[in-house]
Image 1 (spheres, one colour):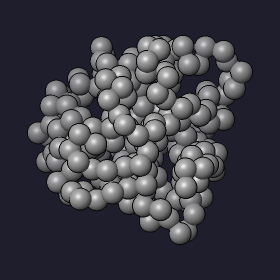
Image 2 (cartoon, helix red, strand yellow):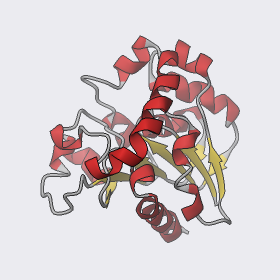
Image 3 (tube, rainbow, N blue to C red):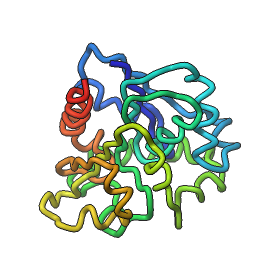
Length: 214
């Protein structure tokens, strides 16, 4: 299995390290980073996808996994000829979500991860252009990417420690057409960073999604 992993905004491929030991050793996993020059010159996530596609030209993947902003880049890679059999979006907001989703880490996970995470953010933030940050913050709508996709899209969201919360899909503010094209999975006891907060649970879902498609 040939899998590409894309990090979220202000993150690097280091974000996936806790997940790696839980993935099958036989998988060929590629953990990409975004070139700082690309980020500085980008006005939108599509610009990142355009530049990244030059490195990935003529490459096919069994799955592209993107976290947060990386999920948007994943979907946009398809427009530049990068082939994937399926997509997994982890905590990718396609429209502004409600307050339920506006948190980074569960309180019980913050002490273990916050300092290293904040340091990564501090290192990477200066390379993100103002226009790029504005493109995925505030009022945005990336649902056309979902509607245009030809391949299956799975979306993994943290359950915020509330597995029985009935409004967790409604709070994503998606239209019926987009919801119909997405296959939802919720990772227990996590917020925006399931690969850090519950790497085994996150890997379990990824393995099931890809394994069931073989």
